[in-house]
Image 1: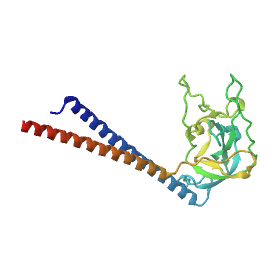
Image 2: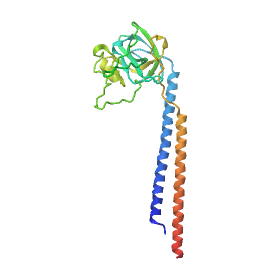
Image 3: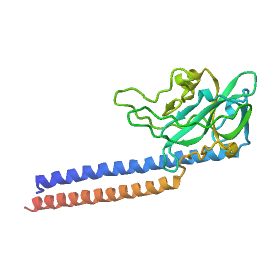
Image 4: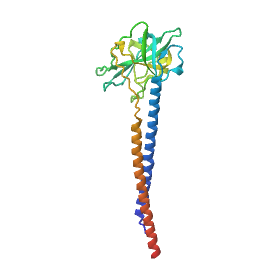
Length: 269
């Protein structure tokens, strides 16, 4: 006759192994989905960069403003509306991205937000607020800026203060008091347009031309598209799930054999 504690141990082992199979197989499926997402990102990048460069004007069709497409805009810088995006690292160094709108040529007075480049962080004195770096001057007069399009300013995970307030919130109105460029974590276009009163195109131009001579670094981060890595991880998780499934069958088979021996013993007795 099977012992009660032996039966309980067998049931517990089957439950644990069964749960392991489900969890490990789910992790493998998740890696496959992540791989599909990265394939889609890679396809979008390749499709955008294959398109002809897009001239940005107030009349440009928003449907043509696809991500990763090369674009060119001509207009006048509006440096009074510049914003610094904090906590952007470059080669392991902390710094900012400088965002400045460019008022486009044309009677409509529309503008496009341009990510001009990266500059290093300035360390603040103890007990003082965020230090203000020296921003490169925006050239006066009509300028032509080239770059790639993004549907939004790339986001960064926001860290909220313990007091519950967002210390990097965009001011309600720009230019900010004192003339200093606000330092924010993220910059939604809708909020920025409301604060500045500008009629913005529904896109962001990430400047790529290095001939500006302003000292800004324009080595923009690229999304990870290594879907092969996800496939490799998925194979590993499915292998672990298979091992757990085999162990489940072994434990179940052992339990069935013990039950049969116990039943045979009772019948012969």
